[in-house]
Length: 323
Image (cartoon, rainbow, N blue to C red):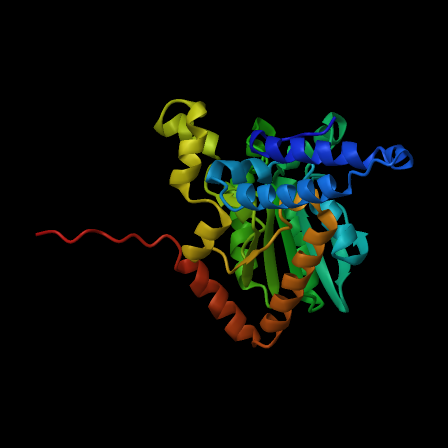
């Protein structure tokens, strides 16, 4: 069954009309032509898409970021990269399937690519733990990043998670420590690093693989210290206030760029990445290659210094002057 968001309904209805007209070629044999009507609906459909998706609220963009048909990490590994060879395990406890990673090629460049992976159905979501990594997921990610650093291979991470797994087992195996170590060690990597938020970028679970020379975010993705529902339940004592919280948090791509929390916004096809995964892949690959080429012109010392300075500049507060 197809999944449509509330604000997509006018587009869906026009698309259904268009498909119905195109599905009756037998009417041409009776001397009846729908060509003019088809052209009118096509123009109206394009204009409706433009109006709807150029005026999305922050909450609507959050809904797009969570769209069940949106491309996930494994989809981009097949379309943006080539020759992907997956590596498994953290060499300490287990292989967390919520994090996937391995060697690949980006155009002509060898890279280490890793990211968080959600599932498409119940069975896969259980396997992938709904994209929420355990400590061993972050330790696996760090193992792969250190392997890449050893051999001078650039690192690319794809972020799509509501957050790290908060269960008892994760706490027993020190989830906070695993993320903290990743933050420290990613700051010290000598190779070029790029992080791209492709869907949800939730709290420390996202930041655990998100410390990089360049941080990109797709147009309809979001990056936040807390989910809108979590913020609403704390501030307004009501998860139904999630739309209000999404606006207050300023978590959309344009807000993040304006605040200096990301370095680039990757455009998506009109209607969102789920409407044209191939087009979204082309756009993401283009921006990744562009930024990788730029980062490579810097010395190791300059990369580390700029990376450190960028993250240290986050979170500045401007106090009002007192009389």
